[in-house]
Picture 1 (cartoon, rainbow, N blue to C red):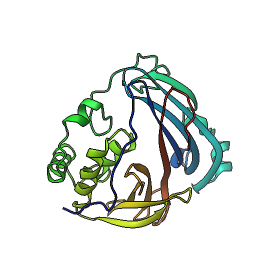
Picture 2: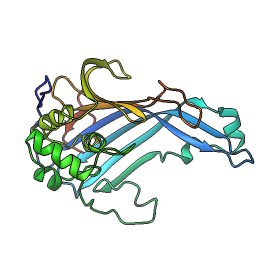
Picture 3: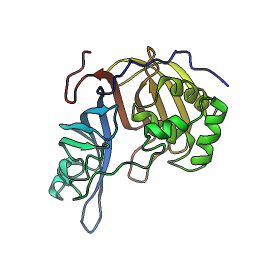
Length: 263
């Protein structure tokens, strides 16, 4: 199996420490106007997120989510969407959310925070500890849990979901990258710039409806973001080559919840 040309490493974390995750994102959303024509308006909006994830998962997590107000309309128009009742904050909850297990929106849904069951989409320390560290065994596990051949699921997508949490330890990230590079339609690009201009490695899946670039920090092999680009025209009027999601992610270890990082 191929190896990623970067060593993975982690900052040491004490039991009371937090992993700080800063995400700069542009994400797509769709607004269907309640009109006889049912017009489809597709927006691309800028988000800034800061998250503090504790070592002890049952402790409080903290999420600070901001909409900058910068919006690009990829289909339809902002004026027509606003006239039809569109409000960006209806689509993305903003503010500061604090809850154990990272179940930030339980209170909004009038529910108690729940411990996640553990899986690729919601990795827990227990789930990660049981995953094999051999690339071939990891690929087999990914394919067993997320069979290939579906449009928006499959082994590559499941791995990206897990990496997005920034919880995967260095001894798992390395073999996982090797497993991904052994999948069909997956290649490595040595130098790619994220939306903030940082140079990353990219593990690229060029298949299905989108081309997905998994960005990797060349220094420590940590997850560094994503970019999704349409590979064909969409039914909402978006053309092939349109970027529909893009993130730049940085992480650090801090000693207290809400503490700023030392970038």
